[in-house]
Image (tube, rainbow, N blue to C red; front, side, top):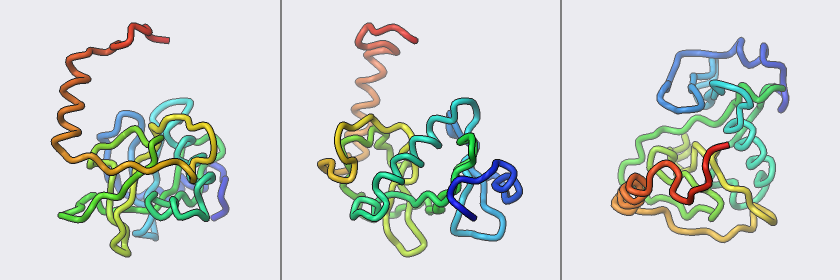
Length: 167
């Protein structure tokens, strides 16, 4: 399969539903290849898929690519993204340090590759970064208690903590 393909080429390979819990995407097995998944965007503009594709294209071939699930193909509209399949059960494996532009830092954003490497499987909600993403500084993965504490703080701040209003 080439890198940017018609939607029908990816749709023909949609297998069993793996996850319907994401707010912007569903995840399916890729028929005929247990090492791949298909992420289906729920609604236009399919921003999470397009962001992951763009980031992968920026980091592929660098050391930073080793900590992210590999993107294999995207549909012409961005509705479908074919990505490396990771096992969400990390066990007690160490979480990798990740770049400062990665904003979604829940444990559910990580998985284990078929070769045993812990990688980021969901990086579609990342911040813009001025400069080369592959050269961004790394930060340690937060502990579960740190993530929970930040969630509590954000809950107390409400939906618009900075008074910016909605678009």
